[in-house]
Length: 264
Ligand SMILES: Nc1ncnc2c1ncn2[C@@H]1O[C@H](COP(=O)(O)OP(=O)(O)O)[C@@H](O)[C@H]1O
Ligand SMILES: [Mg+2]
Image 1 (cartoon, rainbow, N blue to C red):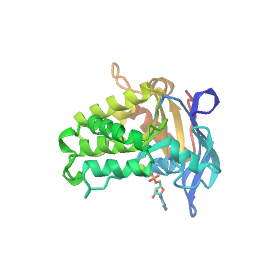
Image 2 (cartoon, protein in one colour):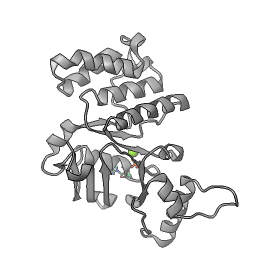
Image 3 (cartoon, protein in one colour):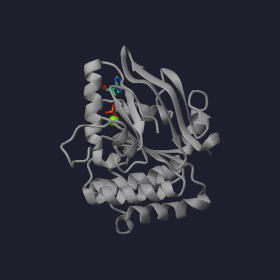
C-alpha cells in the first residue's frame, strides 16, 4: 500500500535529539513507489537514526512521517508489517544455520504456513545458498551473509525495504550482484531506501539525499546533483558526486549553516 500519488515514504521536519544533541535535524523528503533512494553521508551524519525512526523502532522527537501510507506516530505497528529492514549488522544469528535463520525470520514475520516453504526456497535460491542450507552463518563469507540477510528481510514480501549500509564489508563482486537484486526488487515495484557512505554506490541510486551533521543538505538524482552544484575541476575531468559532496560540506562548515538545495 502506498499513499496517494505513489509516495511510499514521506518525512516532514523529522527530528531526533539525544539529550541536547540533534542527531537528525528537520529532514523533509518523499520517496516514490519503486524508487531506489539513497541517504549518503559520512559516519555520524544521522543515517541510521533516520532509518530507525522510519522503521518505527525509534520515536521521533519532532516532525512527521508516513510509511506505506501509515502515520509513524500513531500507526507504527502497521508500518512494521509493511517494511523489510536490514540493519547495519545484518541481524543474522551466527550460531544458527542458514535454514534456521530463515525459519526464525519466517516465524517473526508470520508467513502463512502455506507460503513458508515456497518463500524459504526462494530465499535460499536468491542468496545462492542451496549447497549451504545446513551451514552455520558464522562460516559464511560477507557476501553470502549479506544476501541471506536480504532474503530474511523480505521473506514477507514487504512493499518497502530499508537497507542500512547493506554493502559494508563485502567485496566488489558481491556488491555488484547485490545491486542486481536491488534493481530487480525495485523493478517489481518495491521501494528501496538505503544508506551508504560509498560515493560510487550512490551513483546507482535513482535519487539521493546528502546528509551531513543531521541535516539534509541536498537532494536529487546523481545527474541533477552534479549539474546543480557545479564544481571546479581541471578541464576535461567530469566532477563526481564526491566533489559535489565535499564542496557542499566545506560550504556548510564555512557558513556553519545549511546551503541551497536542489530538489528532484
Ligand atoms: N542512542 C543514542 N544515544 C546518543 N547518541 C546517539 C544514539 N544513537 C546515535 N547517536 C548519535 O547520533 C549521531 C548520528 O548517528 P547515526 O544515525 O548512527 O549516524 P550514521 O548512521 O550516519 O553513521 C552520532 O553522533 C551518534 O553518536
Ligand atoms: Mg549508520
